[in-house]
Length: 320
Ligand code: NAP
Image (cartoon, rainbow, N blue to C red; front, side, top):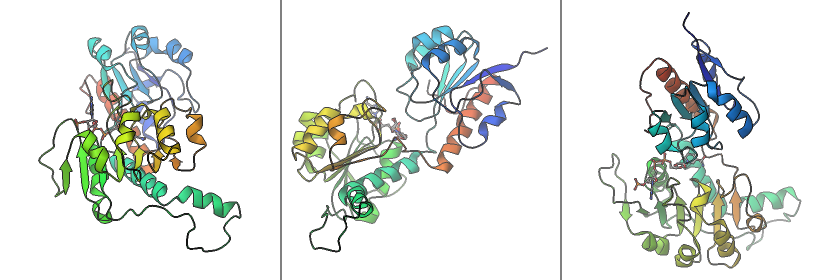
């Protein structure tokens, strides 16, 4: 009798994609509805042929050394800074992610944060709820104009490009920095490439969209904030450690920059206590890809890739 393959799913996922695994494999544990502890992960991984994991779980050498049968690590995210990719490659384990399907949702959230920070939406909401709105006045919660301002995008990958496309409707000239100048866009995008310091000096709105790597950790710190305009609004929907949170709190407190919008944090789920006290920062709880449609598509992608590997084929979204 052929032994059924074993899959470890570290969290129940939206949609019904996970049920498709049941036909060909067994779940090592019922996909949990609460975070799986590191201890439990280490306890069950030895028997896994496939792993479906979250960005909040560190899949390092310790995990992979215990996993004697592991053939694929399918990350339920596009960013894969939580996985030791080099070691997985050395061990012949595929690593997959979920590109494209979350691009538009995450770009929408970057814009939601830019607009909310510029127009002080959260402060306004709090004022109305608390009964402190006493009627229209000429100077109530004045924000920053968005239309026609300059947008600077740091990292012109899939999401950075989607953020840029939305700028047209806001009449915004766009500048960007990436490791190299990009050519061959499918659409007619009106944008200018410049060095990071130049971008920081010129942009009114800055959207951070690079991947987190050793080179991009603290890409934006005290020195970079000091180059920005006093009216600059920065939003980060990429990964928290790309911005030095302490330096950001200082820049916001001292008026070095105007405001910020954050979906991701340096030490998630903890947030720098100084930042939490400030009104000129808008927070969302790492929900860039958090729409029903996108999260269901992401689940389908990780399941499809695991099914391919279990059949002995190459997954469609292999990173290594
Ligand atoms: P992508 O298409 O792979 O783009 C990655 C970008 O990072 C590219 O612009 C790339 O630069 C840049 N980059 C990579 N390594 C770099 C390095 N060493 N130095 C400088 N730049 C570097 O990825 P994507 O789909 O747009 O996603 C971008 C990131 O967003 C993901 O990595 C993830 O962390 C984050 N994300 C967050 C959420 C959320 O829920 N908030 C949702 C989805 C994604 P080049 O253009 O020069 O190659």
